[in-house]
Image (cartoon, rainbow over all chains, first blue to last red; front, side, top):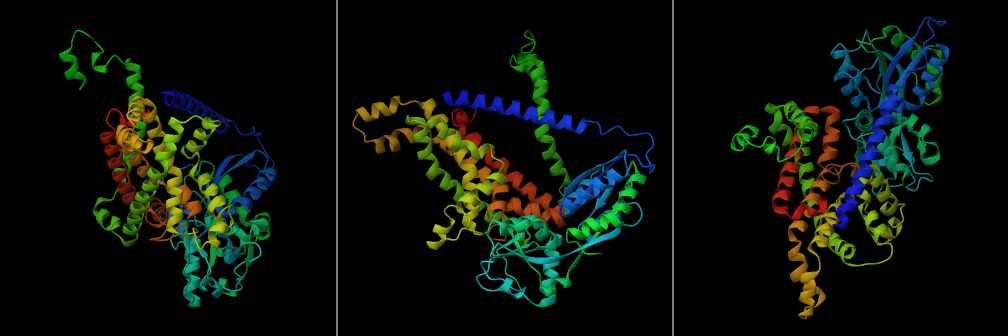
Length: 268
Length: 279
């Protein structure tokens, strides 16, 4: 009986907390963006929502901030997730104005059903690199070391872009890695390495650059076998097609390219 | 149903509702729809012509087999560890007991990913116990053991909660009588206490099994994902969704059917007393 009342009390508290969370999140989404000055210098105004691959989180946050600064009266909302998640969301009718994918395969899924306005533009490229825990305990020095006996290698599953790139590299080099885990996302691979669970992982150059000193990167020549291309495009039924296109142009322009290069992305 | 019962008792309006105000029933309907609608949507999305082929693929069968094996093992561990824990919480008095009870139930409310991280910090290669375990020749990283550990961690509170409530409700009268008659504590436990709370134990175990079966976040964070070793059904669904949403949908239905069956069993076995601890 005592446990029952305790539980009821706990449930009540939980419900109250949940309600609070729901209310605050509603409040934050319904907060209007900054008032739009009727006419700005560039003639652009309004809001857009940009759906971008998770690996673009840091760079696109910076690019969007600079874009808003250069175009007063505009507001860029960013939503980051795995490219295929974003494709599913857009296909199901999520209100996206721009889509930036981490690979061409996922972009093609949208162009195939005419959900992208015009043709997408390639704006960056990324290559694989080896990530090891600080100090490189397993003494990894080359791609071939990943297949060495006793080395716990973590890679992406072939179903996701980083895993497809891994498979291509394995095929091209004839080196067959027996991984201890095939993760669903590159961040999961990185997590297994930074925590020291795995000895080595295959991630993107930009992941290592963004991970600070939690992992060390080891570049390998064979990475040129699988270069990942990032395309961007305005979504077909965008309510603000002009602003969406302006943002796409900005990413492929001087500022966007400078930010991307600084984060380790290559040119397409 | 409303029509038939109201014809039987036409004199008392609202009798069909069992005396519950109508607005409560209306809100209950919304609540029911909230739970049922997504499930119905899931079933409607399943591509039936390909269903058999999708759920019998090599990776699907491996994932289902692994899920059933690990969940069963985790349930056994939950019983072995949870029964003594529930007994200590329900029958003894000591300082900090309330705190201990709250802490044991934490995995119920903890986001699974946080649970995974906590397990990593405890049993990971660089965790609190990881190095000692490695010296002892036990490697948990990326093994099926890690999956079972994660499942036991998240499922144990269900059994403890269910059983502790039943133990408190049952009271100690019969146990006191048995021990006055000369039965040893172990005999009392075996012959009196456990039979008394058996329905709760079974329903708690079934719920633990269901929770273990659905475990995702902690496994993903702590154990990794490799076919036949650590990739349980929820992880397989998550991965399939990347390339073959139809397969993910079909497998989701399999998981749903198993879950519904398990919950139904729990209710039947639990009967009137079994679920008390969870009410």
